[in-house]
Length: 294
Image (cartoon, rainbow, N blue to C red; front, side):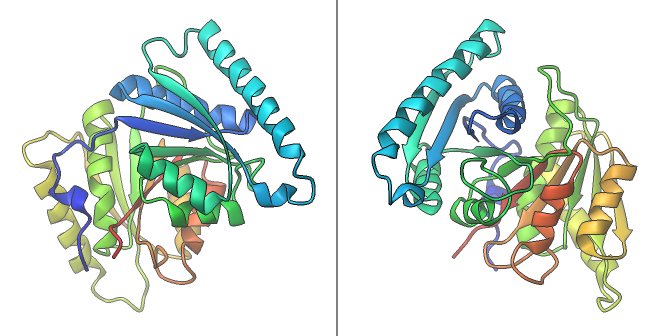
């Protein structure tokens, strides 16, 4: 299996273009809060992306014109509110109102605009008008290969002085999960974050400790001379999504990081099933980092 090219990159992943998917709802506003923090912290350009599926209005094509006008008005209103609170000070930004199918719009947009991080707000239901978990979010996860930060319905909000004290990297110890390591180390470097590496060990897998040691060595080699505040390694048991969620809640983690492979689920099983459960139920944002694809 090929390793993610980021493993051969410099210590800190470059975050130059950040996109936040919005439908101008309060759920999207929560994602926007996090996008503003990231853009400020890394000096990144911020893209606000709003989209409506044309197929939903195939029987009333005239509605598309009206919806586009409403979207433009909502975008201008949102930018006005953010400017009024100085939230966009020193941030280069642009609003995009697009129509089309998710797989085309998001995939092309991330590629064409060289997006380094996509941020989504969720509330656990499907429907493109809400940009929420379900079939639409699943499409987004499958069609984009940049890291995705998901802000779920139970997640804490963000402030401009966001502090991340603890981050948990939930890993199945696969080569694919190594792709998430540089992003966890970046959090440690940027915020002085303590790191928990958590693996849900199946009784059917006897080499958990050996695999964890290999993972630790990879962490150490990528950190190099950088001073990481604290890294702790944990073996968990039980259903993967439940074990990770319980661990994150009990230890008051500020971010869950998942390393994912394009064609396979975290911990096996149906593609991305455990990852979706974690994203939907987490009490903190979840960063999903995709491995390289063939």
